[in-house]
Image (cartoon, rainbow, N blue to C red):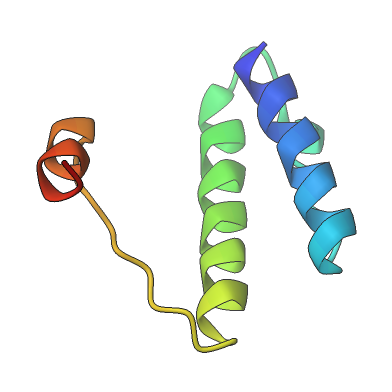
Length: 72
């Protein structure tokens, strides 16, 4: 279910920001979920690269707690 939600978000981002097609679910194989995980990581790297290539600086956090501590 989470992969379907992530695919939906990828579709929205692609349309709204004119990104290349981001096919996550094409990497889904029930007996080999690492393929799906690897593809999700590739897509994350692509999106981060596209954002940074437009001069946006991203703050990255290792955990939700770290994010909350920095933004409270």
